Length: 347
Image 1 (tube, helix red, strand yellow):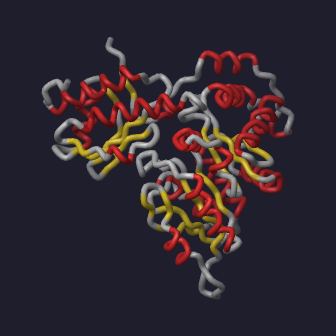
Image 2 (tube, rainbow, N blue to C red):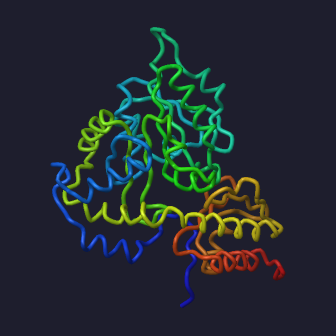
Image 3 (cartoon, rainbow, N blue to C red):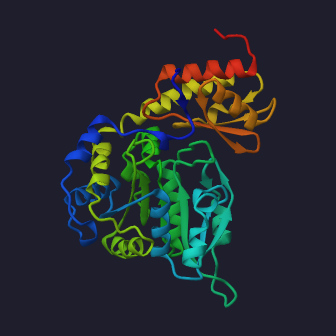
C-alpha cells in the first residue's frame, strides 16, 4: 500500500525513538505532590528556555491557555484577543464557560494585533464596563498561515499592555517555530510576556503535553487552576520525558519543516486554480485558496491520491509540514495536486 502523506497538522507527529526510550526509562513520582522528578526537570528546563521563573506541565495547549487566562483574571473581566485567534475560535469558549469572562476580538494583520484597535478596546473606569483583565497574542499564528511575530512586534504588544497595567499572555503553541524563523532565542520573543504556553505535541513531536511558564507566584496560582479543571496528573513523568528530549533535540530541526513548507508552497503556486501567497509562508504552515472548484472537493480528491490536508472554510486549504515529512514527500504532494487539478507535469 502506498504511503499516506499526512499534512493535516503537526499534531500527527509520532515520538522519536529517543522519546520512546525516555518514556520507558522515566523516573516517576506523584506530580500532584510535586514528587515526579522527570516532570520537575521538564518544568525547570522549559522555564529556563522561556526566560521565566517556573513552568507547569499541562495536558494540552488549550488547557494551558485556559489555566493562564483564569490565573490572570477575575470573573466578569474582559480578555482582548485577535479576531482569528485560537483562544477565540477553537477553545470551546472555555474562558466564558469556566471563567465567566468576555473575550473581545480586535483585528489582526498576519498575526499582529492592530495596536490602535487594542488601545481603543481597553476599558476605562466606568460603572457600565467590565475590566480589561488580559491581552492575548498568538505566535506563530495558525489562521494567518503560521505568521511569526518578531521581537519588536511582541515587545510593542507587551509594552502597550503593561502601560495600562494589564497582563500579557502568549499563546505560543508554535513559539519555537517563530524563534527559528527569526533566528533569535525563544526567550527574546517572550521577554516581556507575563506568561507563555507552548506545545510539545506539535512540531516538537511529543505524543502529548504543553508547558505553561511564568513567575513563581503565577505558576503557584495556575497549578491550582490546573487541578480544578482536572489536569492534576500523577506519574506524569512518562509524559514529561519526551518533552525533555524535544527541548534538547527537536528545536533546531524545525528549520527543516520551514524549508519543506517553502518547497510545497512554491510547487503549489505554479498550479493554475490555486492561489498561494508565497510572501506569507514563514514557518511550517501553509494556507492557500482553491479558485477552481470547492476546497472540500479538492481535499477529498487529494486524499484519494494519498495526501491528507484540511479544508478550513472560505475556499481555503491548510497544509502543515512536520517531523516525519521530508522534501520528497512534499514534492509528491505537489505532484498529487497536479493530478487532481489535471495539470500537465511541471519541470
